[in-house]
Length: 391
Image (tube, rainbow, N blue to C red; front, side, top):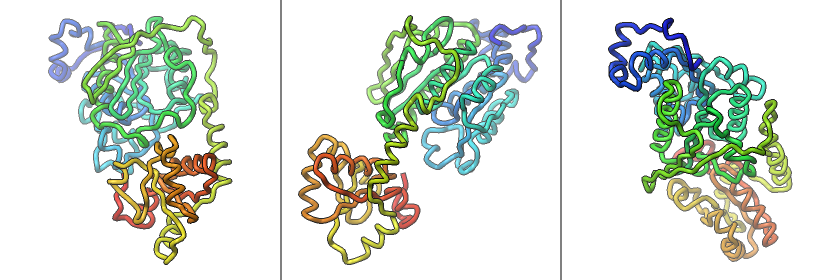
């Protein structure tokens, strides 16, 4: 609770020493440090945003920290998810996070929930925590976190990142706006690429995660002016900050219950459309592609639709690069037609999604049929040629 009985909270001699730089701040002091010790914060996700904010909440002395995550540590996480280490690759993220938190501050109580956040468990998970911090990276979960916070009247400390840009604000706090005031409707599935597709500067989530941690501590202390009603926009490439005002929408729908957020965001419909499209599309495994490349066949063109900087990282021998954006704007369609000259078309990308989209565009605009390489160059690296870097 944000207004605890501080008479019940005591600091040990070691804690006085640990938090000495807080205790001499008039805005924190002994009372504030007791508030931090009495507080409970639930972090959704231990990825790029969750990593720094968990580290700093633990170091600040938040007494109880809950973590919701069901993922395992991957090598590709380590570029930005600084709470995890190489020795934890392949192991649960929540266990890695707890280990690091307790190394930083053994006075923290760390509660782990190794589960996917759903409409069935969100209210039970949230109800006993003072502040909810959203470190997720997908729209269904963001709407779910928001609506659960609204129903339980919990502050929702929000952050998001992509490439070189980040956002942060506080939702549902002291009558301020919530996530649905910023995004009344979710974008169409696939319109906003994930960090896995578009990339992210590894330092960026450190900045946004620390801002989230700062807002969380201010809410607990009851000090300062929070980001409620203000959306902070950060551009790391140009090192600039700017703000947008946010206000509650007086005609927004009333949130009365948690819903199916995958359905709300159009995920099942998009998957069904994709499945139908793939059912009508010829496919080829990377093993079949390898046999084709090793044969003397010269009646095909292997097309790579990734971006040029991806092509520099890793490539399949003989592939011709025409990035998907060029096919989407029409310029690449004529290039493909010239390349084919009666040959059959085989298309690959990183994992198979962009190549399928390219084939759909080529068929619609030029009547060109294509064969999609399932799993893309990632599958090629894992199953055919490990010397090809996986990114």
